[in-house]
Amino acid sequence: MMDTAATAIGTLLPALGVGAAAGAHTATWGMYKDAPHEGFTWRKYGRSIALGTLLGPAAAAVAGLDATRAAGAVVLFGLVYAVERALVEFYKTFVREEDQSKYTIPMQFAVFGKPVQDRARRWTVAAGVAAVALLLGFGTAKLDAASLPLPVLLLIGSAAGWVSAIGGAWKDAPIEGFETLKFFRSPAITGTYAFLISRLDDRMLVVALCALGFTVATIETYKTFFFPSKPRGKFANKPIVYPEWLRLRLRFVPLYVGIWVFVIGAFGQALLSAGPRTEGGTRARQAAAPSPRPDALEAADAVSALVHPARGAEA
Image (cartoon, rainbow, N blue to C red; front, top):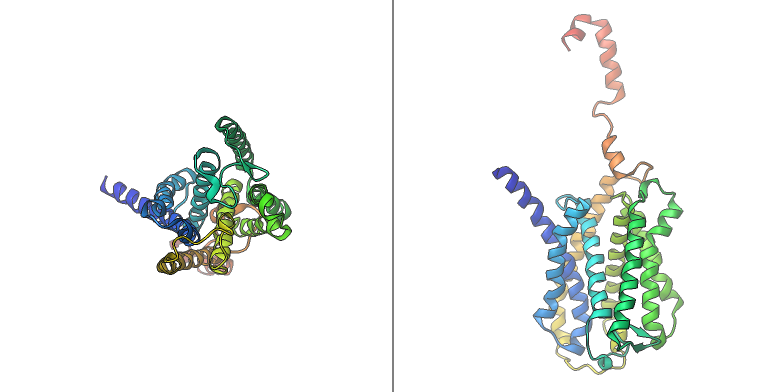
């Protein structure tokens, strides 16, 4: 009984940690860009951390991921990242009621840059978006990534990136104009991550969602920390109301870098352990692990048994 409880705790704690790390990662880049304009509150900063901490064990249980292994931790990190972002963005786009005048680009659902004020219309669109997402999810869940030709894997793996690109263009293009490179960036990065993650897990839905999570983490890191003086699109041409946070936000950078170091290290270890992508999938490779005794040694034993029958009988 105690061994079972210890095993359960030993599985739960790593999943909680990975979920919290994913939430802290997204909370930090969000705070880094927003705090000079909106100020900082621990409540807002802790929102994504709390949600990620809850999603970690839930996602691990549903997807059957072992966060004590490098591959399981990496896939869980990307999965939690994608689901957390999807839930928060869905809430901000369709559910939350907020004055949009403080934003250059509305965060609420908008048509040609004008927020839709009618709640019933927003919720109708939200229901349609949720229905399409569920249909795509159910369809993708039936696919085995390992059995797909590489071009098909890349196409399906980048699907979530295309959805993100279309959604981003719908929101940003009426204000900022359409940027071709920006539009194709998400699908390209998502497809690349899908290829890498398909070596760690053979379930296409898990691969696609995990790839989306890592794509968001990568793009936001690039936009936030490689161009720190460039305000987010939603605050473009808006004044900096809390200039002290241009300095105070630097205190959170070591946490952000530490999470990346952990994730990249685990990713590298998992890929090295997985080996090259081969037909049959991750589980098939594990089930068909080679015999610990090489063929040459088995042949030598057979010859020895013929030369020394008694010794062969003892063996």
